[in-house]
Amino acid sequence: MMKSMHIQSSSFLNIHLEVTQALAQGQPVVALESTIIAHGMPYPQNVATAVEVEAVIRAHGAVPATIAVLEGKICVGLSREQIEVLGSTPDVMKLSRRDLPYAVSTGKPGATTVAATMIAAKLAGIAVFVTGGIGGVHRGASTSFDISADLQELAQTSVAVVCAGAKSILDLPLTLEYLETLGVPVVSVGQEEFPAFFTRSSGLKADFQLDTAQEQAKFIHTKWALGLKGGVVVSNPVPEEMEIPATQIDHIVAQALAEAAQQGITGKATTPYLLKRINELTGGASLKTNIALVKNNARVGAQLAVALAALK
Ligand code: PSU
Ligand code: MN
Image 1 (cartoon, protein in one colour):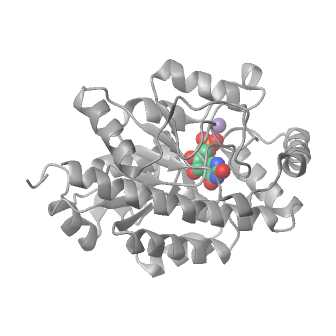
Image 2 (tube, protein in one colour):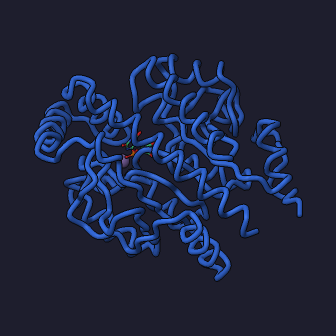
């Protein structure tokens, strides 16, 4: 059945033809965010990674749809040239839910966070979205109130988000508590633990371990069939051989956090600042791990999209 309700481009939405056709035919599509390109990785590795991640998704039988705001439209599915622009233009905005209407109405270019990418994916009718790490409750949130809008979005927008957990720049126990309060299930793949992005281990259990794409798809399909709106976090640990041991990354994260505090970095600048500093302080090691885990997530996300499409 054609889900024509979702898959039309409008004055605000520009869905790539290949994505439109795939959705119309019920074929698997995977959404990808662009904040990781514009604010999460340095140029030119960001652009190369974005292109490679799309190739991994194709290799596993799904159509990739990288999402960003360009020329006043939420673009679902970008050309190679558009990815290059996003990755190399210095003043691309970072767009979460509250920022989307500003970028669309002013025509300023913007990269979408997990929250904004979920919104766009849902508008287009895409059920699976792959990223590196989700935002969460920041350390010190009891005084700063800094809790990523990604978590509220997971509560209300029905898209499955495949990630490698969340970085230890965040308060991971509080992030999981907050997701529990919001009714967002956290699934882990291949292990019981919720992974901590650079490391496979966080010392915290995910809610449910579902190892195969079929199991994950059945779970997600059931949640939505029950009328339970909102996302699912599918957390997939970084491949063992690319992991950075906690002993190495922990003091670097601590240093980056201390510098951010010293420099008075707050609000939406916090996460990009920390990501950049960690990349610098590890001398590129964290970037390699970041790239490896995103590609690993692309495989899991494509397999999940294939399994979900088969259920419909
Ligand atoms: N965590 C990462 N890499 C990222 C981000 C988070 O390990 O690139 C990005 C994602 O786009 C995420 C956003 O949605 O940062 C969260 O920003 P904030 O904490 O300001 O909500
Ligand atoms: Mn924040």
